[in-house]
Image 1 (cartoon, rainbow, N blue to C red):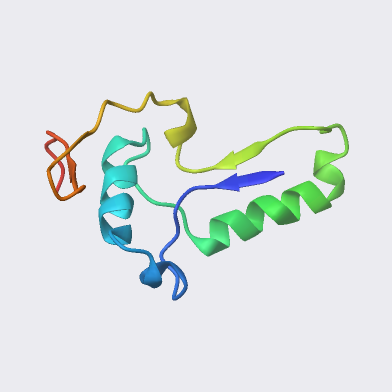
Image 2 (image 1 turned 60 degrees about the horizontal axis):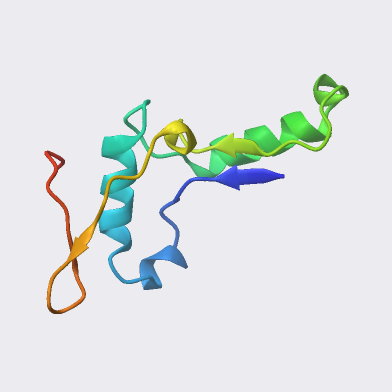
Length: 89
């Protein structure tokens, strides 16, 4: 299975605060970037090819390394908006 990080798409544009999620992921992932549709597609091609013939029952993370990071505590204000102290953009 492929577990992709957040990707900027037309469908994602309908998710409230999605731009915040993209910034958060970029700032907190070890590679300091967001993944692209192409990178997820490339991973799929690898899994479909003979190169992955010895791979079974794995979750293939395509998320710039975010899956290895711990999630910091998030506080919410009175309006339910997240309040997080970080030095991101």
